[in-house]
Length: 259
Ligand SMILES: N[C@@H](CCC(=O)N[C@@H](CS)C(=O)NCC(=O)O)C(=O)O
Image (tube, rainbow, N blue to C red; front, side, top):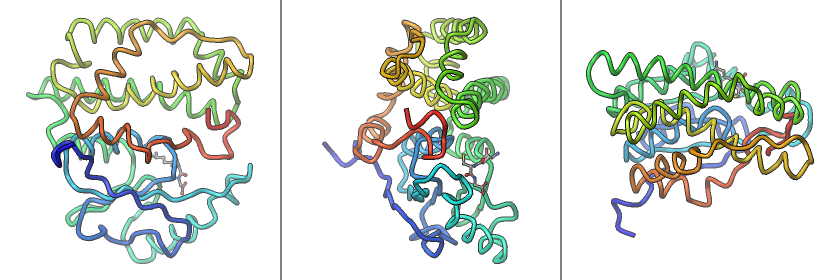
């Protein structure tokens, strides 16, 4: 593989509050989150697609079923980030670069989308991408909430629901109309959000089969779409296929455990 095809993420796994970055590591964009897919996947995908060198910092969460206990080290670090006025509202994910310090997943994704031209072209397309990104966010937020608050049977029930089926049909129509990605021939932040949700759906389907719940069928178009997104650039493909991406979807305190 040539250098241009290699992913440029430096994955740094941390365990302690004292290891949490207070500035961009080596002056490079630094994204900090848990050591899971979670809600950060679209941001990681954006940075991998942008083909810049960046730090993918992953904090390992405690292994119990108690979320507060699991996040103890992070809560200590959170105080430091606030006291030192690095972030007004520290949270995970957070993003540090030489010129910005950001929290809120979608704010970071919009920032990366604008910076690296991943929002589509022209005002109308950019706003449309923004709207669709929120629509895909709603899907991902639902599976996350059900996983943490209700558990496997609730996830399965929602994945089988006609409401979701109808929505997925619209996404299929959009992708078919564009002939490639959601908003057209180039990949945007919308695809990163949609990919993240569909990836979780795919993994959940396999897990739910194992646990003998009702099995929702993955819509027929999804595997081809996931493949297309994954191969959008050699760098994104290298990143998504790297051993570093063999990580759980949720933290250990989720009720629907790690798919
Ligand atoms: N609205 C925030 C929510 C962030 C959030 O809930 N992060 C979870 C992980 S998905 C967390 O553990 N945050 C640490 C904290 O609450 O301090 C965002 O979209 O970034």
